[in-house]
Image (cartoon, helix red, strand yellow):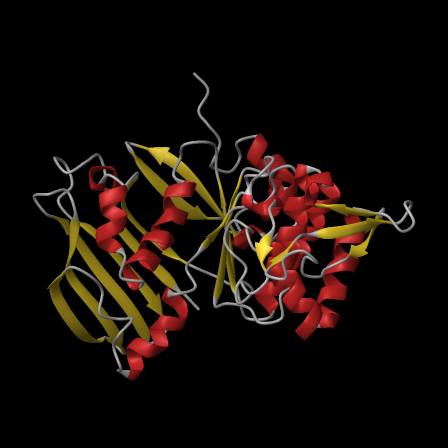
Length: 353
């Protein structure tokens, strides 16, 4: 598990250090830095996958540095996993790209170091310490099921063979569910029951490759009130298809080391948010670390104070503080966490002028 993270010089984060737990829910208003924190994990994954050059040429490197390159000359990250750790320092080149000034992998504080590289060496390394880190660094993908518009990946047909991992935008959802149907039918049944708990009319999935093109598969489902009639992804509401994607992600039989979700509560009914919280707690109990950003009062009401990290913007930088249940004990006797947040008893609310 990722126990501690240090970030310096990245977007709105000038300097931060944070202890992490099995469940980590970042709570704050718009623009305080929740998404920047989460996007740092995407950057780490980009570095690991050896895509740094292409990433920084597509995304203005100037914007990755805290208030730009005139103020910040170096971007640093340190991730600690018990006895193991990973550290990276990025610096700019004259052409606007970034290079790895230094990359270190640690075991019991003893570093293995490389410097002045275009791309990471961790992925190709054969050392035991680096192979151990790989399971974590390759898991740092950000799931966001925000786009539910007509023609969005979440509502589209998928290649039936694209089923090894659920894509971060849910673009292969029918193929992944079909794989579960074939290999893990009990898991698929559990997903169907969970979906039905918030969508009582949901009869179940009907998953099979297209008759006209065996390489394609659509998300088809039945309505319990429409005997013999099947519907597709375009017949689901935005909240319904998001919840199906979330249930699939969180109930999958083989979990990654970590699951990171950006604002999973969007468009969900309060009852679905309660189910979502239960799935998050179940995932953490199975040994998968969870990191979530949210503005949802209903969501945080289902967690302990120690699971919540408030995010604020102070003095031109993001600040991160984990709640202390002991300090809030007297308040929590009378109020929920959500009520304390809306009353500004705990940090993370915007300042009203």
